[in-house]
Length: 242
Ligand SMILES: C[S@@+](CC[C@H](N)C(=O)[O-])C[C@H]1O[C@@H](n2cnc3c(N)ncnc32)[C@H](O)[C@@H]1O
Image (cartoon, rainbow, N blue to C red; front, side, top):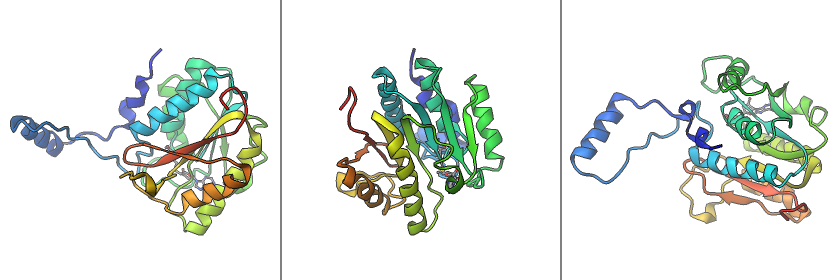
């Protein structure tokens, strides 16, 4: 067992000639620094740091036996979903993994995102997930499983803030009652500016939206260090990890 899939080449931006030349020059000059390619924001949707966080959070709910399925709301081309599936496959392949997306937005990826998703799972010899194609407005809540152990919500497509905020609130509203005690929900783009983090704050309204949803439940979200992009998580109180 290992978690080296965090750095699977599928997540890396190919290193070009200019990058190699600059890295070579830095070595020649004895510069004690590494030239790390920035993620391509049109196709690379998670950072290595985020996958490290995802690995530990998902592994934790499995290790503690939190009941329920895994769900990924906004799976795009399934690269990150396949990564989450690899954690499930290593620990509890019997659990179902549900993926949700309209597959309407290819965000600069010049291919069919649903086909790309299936290819990512196939290449890694992972079980085919349960795919719920359609807008959240129609698939949620009817197609959510009754019990959820781990959820990820990532529906940022640069929509107007009020639209995006309403969508996040809708997703949270349907996911929350289904989360088992001890279940974890990761929210992509959750950014706490007071943390001093230099991560991107793509959606400055998102933290307030998530916090406003959680406050009446007496729960706070945690902003996680996650490199270039931001994310955070919250845990449903109760269970062995309360
Ligand atoms: C930033 S991408 C998700 C990236 C993905 N989690 C990953 O790590 O590769 C956001 C996704 O949310 C989906 N999305 C946005 N609004 C949606 C809606 N109303 N219903 C269904 N899917 C939606 C888009 O199609 C897009 O694939």
